[in-house]
Image 1 (tube, rainbow, N blue to C red):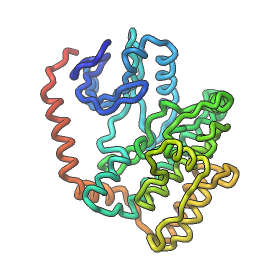
Image 2 (image 1 turned 180 degrees about the vertical axis):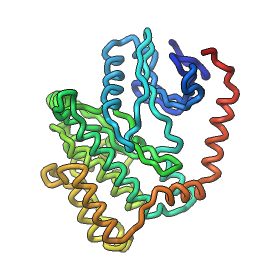
Image 3 (image 1 turned 90 degrees about the vertical axis):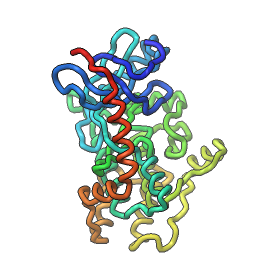
Length: 332
């Protein structure tokens, strides 16, 4: 299939909205066809046409699907289907009605609203629970895969309007063996602004690199700004390699010294000084939430999001339903 003109049919799906594009694939919102589950929304990750001719890229996409399929967690986007037909290859994933964390924070900024503390801690606790599932993945024989996401960033954290939080995009994820090969070749993957120091330097990696990236997201949630902000790529590389992390603005949170201690360990330059696992990081955050007696309720947060962004939610729903209603019926 060449350049795709919306709407188009691929396999058992009709894609009706292009919602993203990366170096390897395009992302579409689609609906299912057929007798079972017809009309259900899904997200399709479809390999770019010219890469569909190259077996190694097709294999990489199918490997991503295989990895995601094994991760059964409410905090990780779930795979429904993955297929290769001719030069077309795609992954069908659950549709999360909402936006990514980067977009959500932008909505708060646009409306000049401060992000509620409860939402900040809800996001990081869900993210860490998802990361624990990723890092705990095992093969068919029960052996640890030592999976590393490698690309944790706000753009790869989905937040639904029901306040669900899910990790997505495992396109550059690697297992332990592949991570060692990356280190030997000095290949660097991931988004520069969210890299651990060892990742930016092309050094050997393990799950503690992901924990550092999660720490950056946590710092940015708490501070309300980017950690590494510069238009100069070389300067961002330097900041990432040196792990330059300023303290939070004084008096921003109650018991802030406890938060600073959590951040200091999560964002330690040396991996050995960080939390050893996502669950250990999660336990520290949960301890702070308990000490503050904060009540973090997904139901309450969902109501808050629906009220704060009612216009944006209605606009998104209306536009997507409008496009779906214009599609001609597809024969089953």
